[in-house]
Image (cartoon, rainbow, N blue to C red; front, side, top):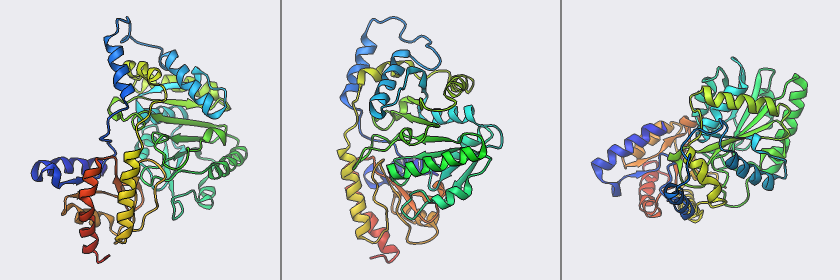
Length: 379
C-alpha cells in the first residue's frame, strides 16, 4: 500500500504540479546527508588507495566492524568485537539474514501491531509464520496478550523502536519486563527465544535516547541501517549486531555469515563500508523533523484528530474519523492528499503520515487537512 500511494503521488505530480500535491506516503527523507558524508565520499573516490572495490571478508571489512563494535561497546558497556558485527544490505537485508539463520519451517515470530508489513514477507521467505498481536491504546506492549501468544513454536520476537508507523519509543521498564518474560518462557520451553530489534530510526529520537534490548535480554540481535540517521536510504548499508551475551553467539554469527552469502546479498556495498568509519558520529539534523512533527501534530489534534504524539522516527499514526481507513484515504486523495491506510500496518481505522519532507510543503498542506476534517464534520 505504501508503494502504491508513492506511485500515485508520482502520477499526480505530473498531472497537477508538485506544488498542488501533498504526498505523505513514503518515508523517503528529502533532507541531504550531513556534510561529513559527502566530504569523505569525495576523499575516498579521489584517493589512490588500491583494492577499494575488491571482495572483502563476507561479514565486511574488519576496520568497519571494529568501528561499529567500538561504538556499541561505548554505548552499552558490553564486550562487542568485530565478530559480533555483520555488514548487510540495509536493515531489510539484515532482517532476512537473521530470519534465514534462526528459523526452521513452521517457527513463529511475534510482531506487534501496528508494524511494517514487509515483516510478514521477510519471515515467510524463510518458512516462518508471523504472529501479530495487538498493543495498548498508546501502542505500547500489552503483556497479557504477549504472554498468551508465546508458545513452544515461537522462535523469536521482533520489535521496532522508534516505531514505524507510530513513532513510539519503548521504555527501559518495558524492555526489562519483556526480557524477564522471555527469559522465563525460554526456560519453560527448553530453547531460547531470540529478541530481534529493527532499529533504522534509533537516532531519530526527540525527547530521549532510545533504550536498547542489549541491556535487558541476553539472547538479542539488532538489524539496522544508516538510511535514516545519515539520510542515505538508497545506498542500502546496514549491519547485524549480536549480543556478546547471546547463548548461541558463535553459532548465530557463523550462520548469519553463510546466510548473507546464500541469499544473494554476498556483501554489503564496499565503498559505503569504507565511508562509515570516516563519518564517525555524524547524524542528520533533527530540527526539521521536530518542526514538521509539531506542525502536523498540533494542527491535526486542533481540528479533531486523535493521535499519539511520536517520540521518534518521522511518522504520525492518527485515528480516522470513520472505521473504513481505505475509504478515508480515498477521500483524501480527492484533495491530492496522499496518506497510507492503517490496514497496511495491520491496524485498520488509522492512517500514516510520513513527515520527512520540506516544511513549506507541510505548511501548505494544513488547510487541506482542515478541508478533509470538514468533510467528516469534525469541525
